[in-house]
Length: 195
View 1 (cartoon, one colour):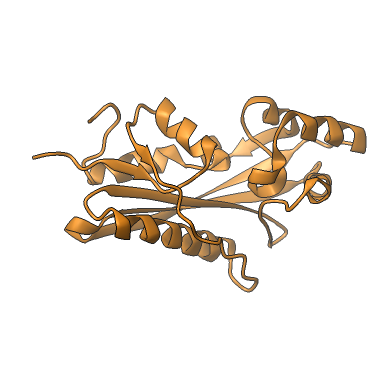
View 2 (cartoon, one colour):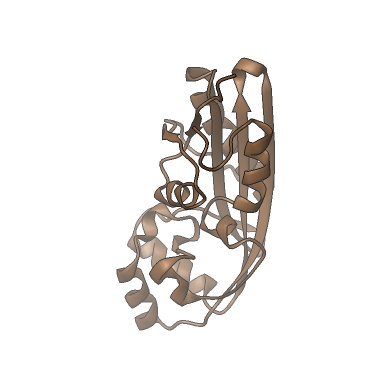
């Protein structure tokens, strides 16, 4: 029996890097959907809804492939923080997170339409930021591209300079909780290194 191919329904370079580093072979098909940012939904509800919408778009077009979609958001004191619209907003977000704890949630949707199988799950992590002044925040933003990241920061590479501690999955904070993704993909016959 031929194993189905894996398609990552995401344009995120971090998700691609995580899957590649974990040894997966996959294709990339970024979904063309607008991510919901509806107030009134919890962090879990919103990330689940966005991951589902992204995954369904790609799964409908590729029913014989296993589709992996995800959505990551940040919440501070219950307020959901997505990607900043511009550098000024990125500065404001980092200043608000500075010296404080916030939550990061990623919801994941996996589907294989040809067999009628789908599953969804979520991961949460707590992130503690170092205290940073305006000049330090400016230097930090010069080192990363904050505009394509929930919460305007990176938890990998140069981005780690601002993160003091993570409780929970680090890969969740980066954008894909591999500790949960690996067993989920295995249920669909997708394993690292497999064709």
